[in-house]
Length: 133
Image (cartoon, rainbow, N blue to C red; front, side, top):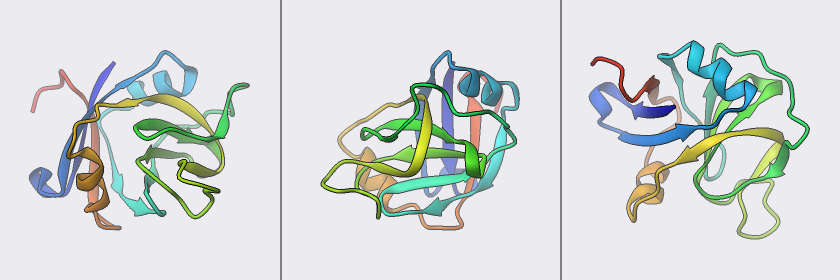
């Protein structure tokens, strides 16, 4: 499922597109869209609570890649990874603990810089890309 992630009123903090995969957590998220929240910043990761309860997938990992979209079961949170976090050992994105990979963000040259500019507390909405506006 194609999604749109909008930060700030009317997208003033950024609008990003991505794709959810077929995992159980991704499908659970798809069923509750649109979902809103307030962004938290943890290094170069954005995360926020979503109304989804899903367990940890067998292939869940704390090691991620730039552009990964993930679900963090302990915090019932949606995560976007775009660089180092406080848990990183090198330049790799690393979650606080294992997360389920639920999709990928479309990456363009300006994507990482735009994500870095999103402030903690920014309003965020995840919606299906084909949802009426």
